[in-house]
Amino acid sequence: MKALISDKIHEDGIKILQKGGFEVDQKFSLSPDELRKEIANYDAIIVRSGTKLTAEILENARKLKAIGRAGVGLDNIDLKKAEELGIKVFNTPEAPSVSVAELTMGLILSLVRHIAKADKTMHCGEWLKSNYTGYVLKGKKMGIIGFGNIGSEVARKASAFEMQIGIYDVDQDAKKKAKSLGYHIYTSVDELIQDVQIVSLHIPSTVHTENTIDARRLQLMSKDTILINTARGNLVDEGALIKALQKKKIGGAALDVYREEPLNNLDLCQCEENLILTPHIGSQTEETQIEASTGATRKIIDYFKSLK
Image (cartoon, rainbow, N blue to C red):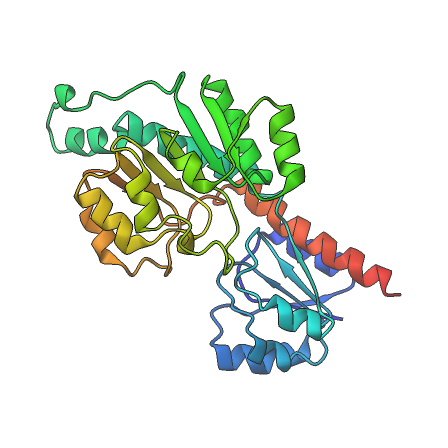
């Protein structure tokens, strides 16, 4: 059996594949045409977010039985085509929960306490103490859109700051879980964003969730509301967000994900006063890289064992 690793993963995952009887090839930065040719030779492929497994590429995957996604999002894989071809797809939604949740809280703290701006001015030799009056998180309302692995972890951490937690999710089990924990359940995104001081996105990228935060919903937010997106870039209309930030219609925003990555919308870089940008580092911790890598490869191994 042969496995192709097309995005860098932790070496612990590679060892698991090898011990499981796979011949492993690591080939990074393949063009779509190169990947289309290469994938025909493999029984399994391990990807992260960089590799795009389109329908055209999968059509040529004549031997492929399984795809392992070392991470959460599956928007870089044509799931319909994979199902049509009988290719199993595995991801590791449990792996980045803590690291993304911790980054989310870090971004919130940086916004409400002006940490990034204060650091920048201090390094320029300025002492602007009176410019950086923030506010405490205790007692503030936080609205979490999406109460899955990451959203629930964010809620847990925000609760430690004595914040009031409210959630919106279409999943009934998620709502039951949130209610059992004492969190407020919002009936719509509109209701949530009009009632909270902090909005945090934790939903997958689908045709139904694109532009969840658009110009209309940004208008519904109060001028003090801050928006955090550590989920997927296309959940937010970047053009509308830029206008809202420039006109100070909302209090601020922090983004770790973008519609195009690496970041191509340089207009976002001009919103220095009330926007924090990080380069998709939510899962960039040593622990998460190990867990995502080993989790994806173990699922591949288990699946192939089940076929025997």
